[in-house]
Amino acid sequence: MSTTDLPLILGIESSCDETGVGLVRGCELLSDQVASSVEEHARYGGVVPEVASRAHLEAMTPTLHRALDGAGVALADVDAIAVTAGPGLAGALLVGVSAAKAYALALDKPLYGVNHLVGHVAVDQLEHGPLPKPAVALLVSGGHTSLLLVRDLATDVELLGDTVDDAAGEAYDKVARLLDLPYPGGPPIDRAAREGDPSGIWFPRGKWGDGTFDFSFSGLKTAVARWVEERERTGAELPVPNIAAAFQEAVVDVLTRKAVDACRAHGVEHLVISGGVAANSRLRALAEERCAAAGIKLRVPRPRLCTDNGAMIAALGAEVVAAGLPPSTLDLATDTALPVGQVLAG
Image (cartoon, rainbow, N blue to C red; front, side, top):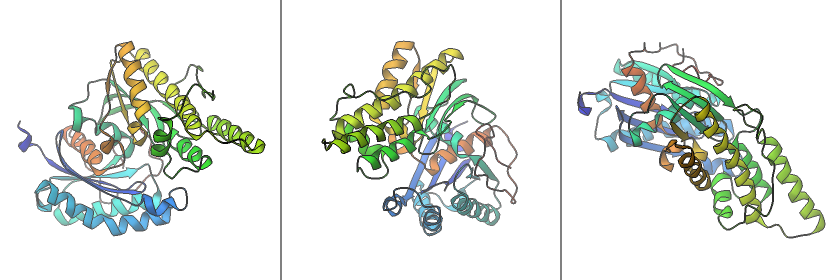
């Protein structure tokens, strides 16, 4: 079957502070448009759910039209609609699901409520082609840090380990606040760390060798806070680049070590890293180094596809449609805590 014969999938993402709409045929990305409200949240130092929901309402229709124009297709050409049903912020999810239901009803097209987290894994196929089976996925974002065993994107995703407290992205945001760096904290810490020495300060590695694939970054964040407080108490200057570099090294050390260990434990030769923190330069570099040493093939989408977007939801929708799974009904409910093993909601 040629690419042009595959169903055209519209994907809608609104789980947090990005309104994303994407169009996909199989593993081919036709259009990806995102409207972010991050600047509106920056003044508060984090995402404000009510502000995010309002921003989605305002951005949904124009973002959809930009996506259609970018792909050179009409709304009537869409064969199926996929939408993030969870996990995420309740109000934000509701905006996206309501829009998807309206389009599905008006167009008489099937609707698929899908899992946001699995979408982050599926998006890699738009850059590197079909995902080998099985694969291990390290999902690292502002709200989630998880290791997944992916035997089939549409039907068989197993949670191997999860964060027991702060996700890696949350720790970045909190440490950035301690260092007077902008929100969101990932990019400014990454930039500052390039000028610093990661070996000058040692910060703890949570759950380093506990034999699980779980993560913990709350203690690391607290250790950075205590170190900063002690310097401020004595009036010493804060070496921000060195702190950023040491903190970042502690995070990526644990992430990459546990990801490689998960691949070895399950006899898997392919690792996918996805989610917003996957855009981090040091995480990518250390993952490449450790995967090469372990004989593991590493796949990381380009930074644009790592953050929340509609393309990832369309990509997962394409997998669900290809697997012949039944569509969701129009009474599809959102689920703020949708478990990662449940690919299709409802």
